[in-house]
Length: 482
Image 1 (cartoon, rainbow, N blue to C red):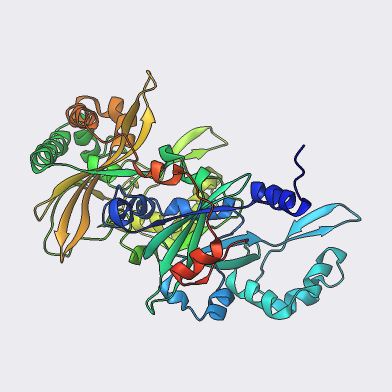
Image 2 (tube, rainbow, N blue to C red; image 1 turned 30 degrees about the horizontal axis):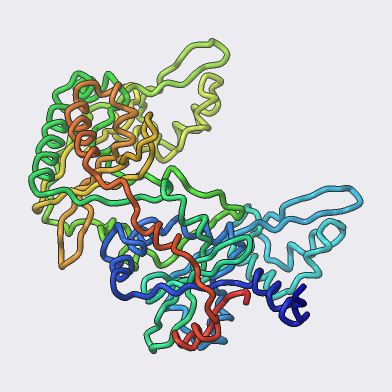
């Protein structure tokens, strides 16, 4: 029997558990996945779904991102990076009573608050905290809100020149190698491949052809104008119905991903992304004034405002008198029939009071809604996610139809039709929404249902010396657990 020297046996055992590294650079056929202007490239998809990154980072325990002091040690300006801010409440625990309380900021100064609670054992932990940090938490929290700890972390994916795939025995990571303005390179973000392979969570984008865009724009405009001839709209204008849901006012906002990750910290927020040309370079900004004509519908008289009288179990109206509003309000508060008046926002009530005539029954204030916007030439695009149909075949699930215009070389959102919401309300709108929804669903059949970058991450990881890779890339910091 052949005897293996112990040193070779030990090397063999260690190599079985050693990390493996593969390098994917912005070269050759892989270069298209680094094209951040392509909304369906690897980096383009991440920029288009950048809100998910904060949740991924939270899941990873904030590994692969930087705090400010770490950047200072590296000589890197945080202004070059994107950032996310976490917010967690300060909770105190008293072991003898097994009681946990949140610290609520009062109108007092921090010193006054500490003096007022120094006799309570449960607050002992506050006196052991760093005074400077505690003052910062106090200053950054709102009055009568729980005291919070705010932490900011920095990352970036915009200037990625390479991906470093790291494979461990129990997990696999993708490290983004970014190039700074001074030419230095560093790991700017680390995410687990398991997170990136959940492709049904990511929104993709499809740019419609000019012919498709014109057809959809014409159809949506027709539906909007048909809607203002509907009975529901006429009843709203006459003040007979309190609510009216116009197509643009209801569907004019972008939807949110239906697959947001769970986050353990309250107040997780991305900062600086609005400057990163996210959302596939269709910016969520306003078109310059003067270049847009808005068609509006106005409710001449709102619905009658009524209060519930608990003693008589009837509804009572508010009649406008010649008294000033403040005096009339105080008078009504003395009347048992007007118990619920304290629940009304007094700003709205005063507006209704001042716009009514003496002797009138108080009605909600006048309202106007935009039912159509007309402006520069627009093009169409779809946001969609990849799912499975009833036969388990990949299909495109459209969330929004976006009409955008180009201004100063940038794509700017002009009208958004929230298709997910429209499908929910189609029964309410009836035939008004059906034509445009059918056209959208027909186009969904031809959309891309594959994410080609998944193969990029699944490529076999090679055994390569990290030291050599680091020198090859001239990385100033790895931020890795090597």
